Image 1 (cartoon, chains in turn brown, cyan, green, orange):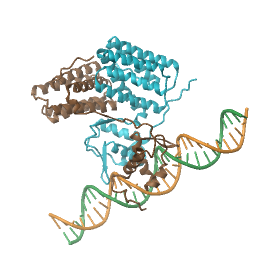
Image 2 (cartoon, protein in one colour):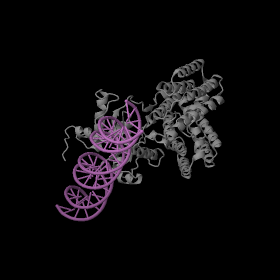
Image 3 (spheres, chains in turn purple, brown, yellow, orange):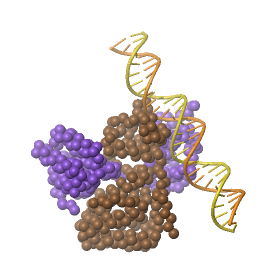
Image 4 (cartoon, chains in turn purple, brown, cyan, orange):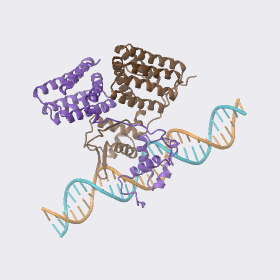
Length: 239
Length: 239
DNA sequence: GGTTACATGGTTATCATACAACACTGGTTT
DNA sequence: AAACCAGTGTTGTATGATAACCATGTAACC
C-alpha cells in the first residue's frame, strides 16, 4: 500500500502529526468546544493513515485534556482547555521569602510522608532506603553526587508511602529547592556536617524500619530543621 | 429519591492503566533514566493486553516527555523527566487508587494549611473567608456554582497561610480532584448535605478566626473526612 | 397514551496478524 | 582490516475482525 506522503513524512511519528493537525484545528476555531470530531474512520481516511495512528493521536489529545471521547458516541472537543500543568519560576526563588515558602511546603510534605512511610513501608522500600543511604555515605560532602543521593534518599521515603502523587510532588518540590540552593552557591563544606546529616538520615531510616510514625515524623522534622540552618535559613517552628 | 448507583465506573481505558502503571515504575525508581523498557510484545504480554494498547500508552508517555523511543531499537526512560512542570493525568484519576492517593495528598496539604492559616491569618484573610462562605450559602447544593464557591473557600484558607506556593499547589490539586469528581458524575444532591457541609466550613472558619491551630486542623480533617464519604470514598484514618 | 422490550446501525475500544522500516550483530568477502 | 551482506529483533504502520456501548426507531404490552 502506497502512502501519499507529500507533507506527511518528515516528522517524527505520524500520530504526532495528526495530533498537532487536529490541535491546530481546535486552536484556530474550526473545531469549537463541544463539537464532535469526525469518526476515527473518517480521520484515518482524510489524513491517509491507519485508524491505529488516529487512535494514538486521539489518546494523546485526550491525555492533554483537549478532547474527550466516549465509547459508542464519539470524540468531542473539551469545553475548557484544562490547566494541566503546574510550574515554578526558578528565578523567583532567589528571593528569600519565596524560598522559605517553598521550603515550608516541602517540610509539610516530607514530614507527613515520613509518617506514612513508617506505616506502610514494605521490605523492598526499606532496602531501597538503606541502599540510598549507603551510597550517600560514599559521596563527598557537598558534591553534586552528595546532593543527588540525598534527593534519592528522600525519594525512597516518598516511594515507601505508596502514594505516587506524593512521590511526584515531593520530587518536584525538592528538585526546585535543590536547584535554588545550587544557584545561590550556598553550600559550605565541612566533614563534620556530613556526619551530622547522615545521622539525621539514619534516624529517619530507623524510625521507618521500626514502623514508628511519630518518631519518623519527628526525625524528619529535625532533619529539615538542620538542613534549613545549614543553608542559612532561620526556620520557624512548625505545628 | 435516592439512587444508589454502584460506583459509576466509567472505566478508564486500558491504555491509561498501562501508562500510569509504567509511569509509576519510573516514579518509584524501578525504571531509571536511560533504562530500556521491555519490548512492546513483552509489555503486552505482562499486562495481558494487545500490543495496540501498549502502543497508545507509550505514545502518551512519549508526549509527556517521560520516555523516548526509536524505531528498530526500543523505548527508553528519558534522562531528564520534565523537571520544569508538574502534570497530573486526569484520565488516570478515574482509577480509584489514583483518586484516593490524590485525595490523600490534598488532605495533607489542607490540614496543614488550616493550621498555618489559624496562626497567620490577617483581618483581610478572615473577611475573604467569610465572603466566600456566604456566597456558598446562596448556591444550590451540588451545582457547578456550589463546587466553584467551595473551591474558592478553600483557596481563601490557603491564601491565609501567606505561603504563595501553598495556594498554587492546593489549588492545583483541588482542581484536579474536583474535575475527577465531575467526570465520574458522582455528586448526588440533598439539601441536608448542604447544611452539613456548610457547618463543617463554618467550624473551620471559626477556628481560624479564634487562631486555634489545633481546632482548625481538626475541623479541616473532619471536613475532608465528610467530603470523602460524600463522594463515596472510604477514608482510612490518618493519624 | 405511555411505557417497555427488542432490533438496527453507528462509533469507540480492543484484539490479532501481517508487513515495512530501521538497528544491531556476526560472519563473509574483498 | 575494512566493506559488504544476511539474519534477527524492535518499532512503526496497515488491515480486518470482534466486543461494548450509544442512540434511535419500532413493535408489543398495559
